[in-house]
Every structure is written in structure tokens, then in C-alpha cells.
Length: 319
Image 1 (spheres, rainbow, N blue to C red):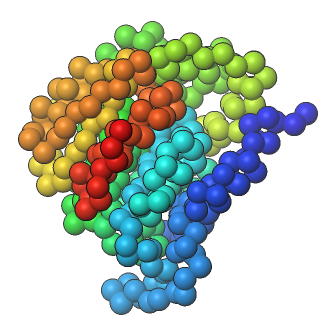
Image 2 (image 1 turned 45 degrees about the vertical axis):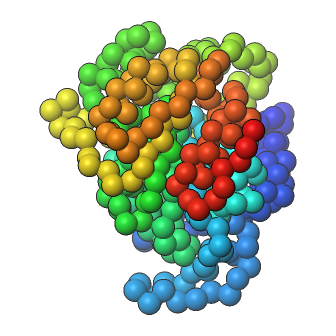
């Protein structure tokens, strides 16, 4: 029987082609390969040599600032950002990576930390010719984005983060899971049954979503592979309450939130804004949960464009 989710891939690929991005694999280091959706125009240009590293790359359009869209834990890059990519490509060179163990990205390294994901992303983007960028991160991708900004302040010029936190401390993890009625992060984010996937969607979305059970089953088969490694990624997220120190980020940081987010609620976002200081701003979107960019894509895109425009010399759209 045809998997309905897998059958949609050619359609999504076609939509991405129309939006001006194309899949491209990059070897980060021996044993580590990451998949990126990159601006098609960069793949059509002649290669040039990077003097610093001697790597072959193709330069992005210098007239368009680079924007990196980093997905969360329950879906790969273009599935997560399918409603945002086409909205941004007119003014930005949009790159959509698949994090390690998602969408064909793989490594033989035992490191499962967000810092390693951040390191591999920056190496890959530099090989693609990106010199500086703004990073948009959702949920797990937001934690990776924060790490990128902390580790590579000269590379990341600004952040937009949705439904995420600086670090998953053991107390935040316990409080979040207890409040949602789950025993572990794996139980919440790595469902093994249709019932489990429905439970995940019920806490991630503001409105009740209805799909036939077959579609849930097909989504489980396609989107939840590499379960062992993803479980290790979840374990690699947890840090002790004694360990986290809020970095002194030099970048501007925009927190763009679904006001009804049950996983990382608006109060948590407001507290994080205070921790980050005067360079951080918060914007809430009404009638939207954790999946704000999918539930209310038009509203999310309006706010996202304004956030990005404030970080670049581009006139903010008027509505």
C-alpha cells in the first residue's frame, strides 16, 4: 500500500523548486554528511576556491542576506518550514538544513550534543559559501540556533527563535513533561503508535487536528526513523540546573511565540527575554500553539519578515 506521506515528497520537492531551493548534500567531515536545501542560484554558479580552507564552494547571491531555517524534532527541514520558504526567497538566500539523523543527514560521531549539531551546521554553511547569516530556529532547532550564536558570534548576526529555550535543564524537563502528562522526552517526541502521535499533536497544536489513522501511521513510518540516535539526541539535551549560564549574546534575538504554546509556554519565553537582556524582544501570536508556524503561517510570516527586516537593510513589509 502506498505511504501517503512519502507520496507527497515529489509535490513538496516541486514546490521547493518553484520557491528556488534544491537539495544538496555536504560532507562535513569523514563520516558526517548533512543535507541542505539551498538557493538554486548558488548551485548554478561556477565554483570558487575558499582561500582559508581550500574547499570548493559556490557563492550565494551577495545581494541577498542568508537566512537559515532550523527545524524541530518531529519533522525534517522542508516539512517544518514548507509555508515559510517561498515567502522569504524574494529577499533572502534561504538555507534549510536537515539536522543530523533527520532527512538523510548522518554521522558516525558519538557526539549527540546541540553544540555538535551547531558545529556541523556552520561547517556545512561555510562550505556552501555562507559568510554571515541570520538563524531562525524552532523548538529543538532553536536550541541548536542558540548554540550557533554562542559559539560563532562572528558568523551569526541575529536570531529568531520560536517555541524553544536556551538549554533543557533537568528541572525544566521534569516540569514540562509532568505538566503535559508524559513520563519522558522520548515518550512525547518519539511516539511509537498512532495514539502516541495523536497525543503529541494534541499538546503541540492550539486547535484540535483531525487526520485519518492511516495518515498518522504513514507519518510515523516516514518521519520517525533513526529512533536510537534521536533518543540519544534527547538525552544529550539535558543539562544540570547547576550548569547553565546565560551567554552574553552580542546578537539581537527575537522571540516569536504561539501564545498558547503548551510545551514551552509564553511565561517561559517572557522569562527568557528578561534573562537575555535589552537585545531581546518578544512577540506573541494569538490562537496558536507550539506549531505556530504551521497553524498560523500567514501571521507567523508577517512577524518573521518584520523580525528579519529589523536585522537587515530591507524595508519591513507593511500590512
